[in-house]
Image (cartoon, rainbow, N blue to C red):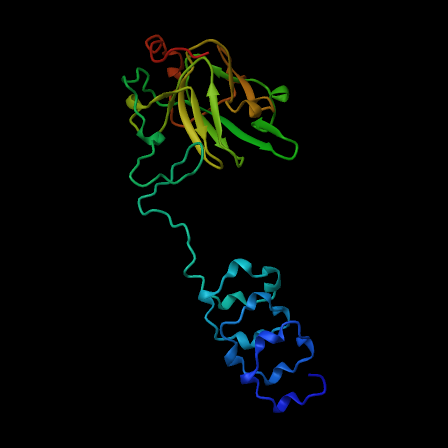
Length: 281
């Protein structure tokens, strides 16, 4: 067929089965009737040379995108794409944010127990107002991996000292981005959770969420030196620990700050409070 004038040939009557093996790279496809291309096997075609500008208006919903070369999609204007059909997670209307070990959504139809739900099984025997406040500030650095109480790790810290018999408010302030379950040995604390003082629950470990403050009342009725530390042991071993000393100390020795408007003469009225909680070691 070399030298023949193909422009005058009637290709409609050609036996295309005999065309196998022909070199189509030299053929002028610009005059082909692409309407007749329906049903062709396009899987073997070289699409890299296609004019994609002509693809506007195509129905892409029926295209198999699993075989697309997404590396070639760089530079596409995605701002005009309709993403409204993509699945997105939406919070349930009755989801409840719970502050504790972590912030989480409660599954629909379930109730998450919060500190505000807790109530003492028996009436508290010591219902005095706090006469002083002990600040326990929680911090640390991930870069050096040191965890601290009041800015110091255990090996560098001075022990916390409180008066025997005093009613104290312990204020845990979490300056870090991690939750800390703070544990006190020897005595129970009464969590200030919105309950009346007679109904406040006894706790020996309080979870302090990141960036939050949790307070509890303590009757310092057990003489001795008691450990106070984060119950995440890798935080404790990295420095978040101290000693709470309960002793007959002078006003100049205590680590607490007096609360204005309270009567300091109540500090030694603990004879009847000894049964308020069992010592925890």
